[in-house]
Amino acid sequence: ALRPYGRDARLLRKGKSLKGIAARTSLRRIWVHGVDQDLLHGLCALPNLEVLFMEKVTAQDLSLLQDAKALRHLSLDGVPAIGHLSWLGERRTLEVLSLKNWPLLHDITALAAQTQLRGLARDGGTWTPLQLDSLTPLAGLDRLQCLSPINCQVPDKSLAPSNVSGIACIALRALHCGQNFSQDQFLALRAAQPEIRCDWFDHSA
Picture 1 (tube, one colour):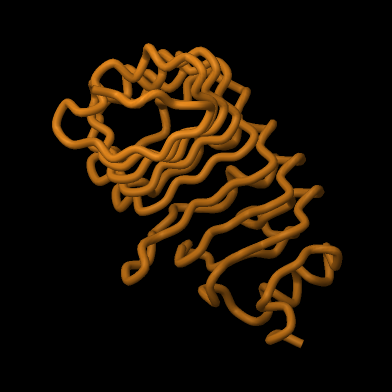
Picture 2 (spheres, rainbow, N blue to C red):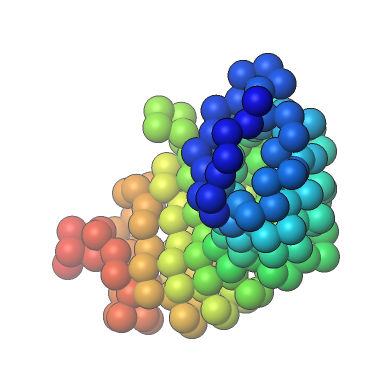
């Protein structure tokens, strides 16, 4: 049986242990480990859910997330079998989106339409770099303030705003990434947008 919850919950699914989660309508912020299709359906039915952190996601149809109308902050960590972002659909309500440890997700073109985003993480695994086709889709995210492409590699290795594959987010204030880009790229970005905070700027002086 489910214990009573307030607005926040930290959950670990074991079998059908979280069946009935949709009845906990007061929930606003959830961290949950082990999300299958049935559990995702229940989570997306919560009318007041604003923040959702999911780890080890085995659900195959993420389009259900469009039903979570109040959702503003979404994090998915560990999605082994999905290689696309078409599930984002037409929703434009997410303010923070974190996509971590998705080995099959190389094309982030769908993010270009998410112009309302203020924070974005597209991180690779701890030991295995993530291969991204391009950073070009991020160039038009003019509200983006924080970007985290940790352990990501792109073919042109470019961060320069002047480059067609670069980051030209005028609101960007924080960049968190590994040293997967050349020193020249960090110098170019700092010259173009000196207000950005990035640990590698100090090493590129």
